[in-house]
Length: 112
Image 1 (cartoon, rainbow, N blue to C red):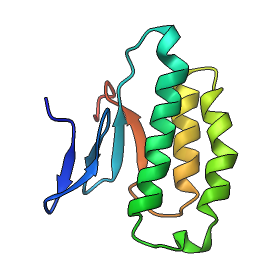
Image 2 (image 1 turned 60 degrees about the horizontal axis):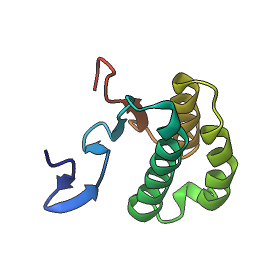
Image 3 (image 1 turned 45 degrees about the vertical axis):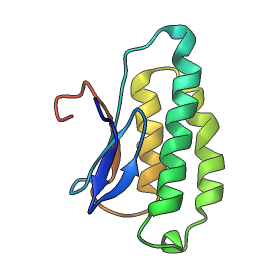
């Protein structure tokens, strides 16, 4: 199954994620062994942060320091005690951009 998403012929997100163009939601898989958890979270965080960094419509991020925001939230996300806290931390980071229709939800979420 192809997990790349395209908009106007351009690959937007690769790997374990997909991009929903209108809602700008990133969907992440949730099923993995406990031993894979830290690696999966680090990969998810890094891909989300990098894709926003590379593709966000405003190169100035609305005057916000996206580098500093990433540093602030990476450790919080990787050490979140639960999956719910992990997603909440990712969303809090993304909401700092002050744009609508942006968020991260697990693949097994009812709206996913």
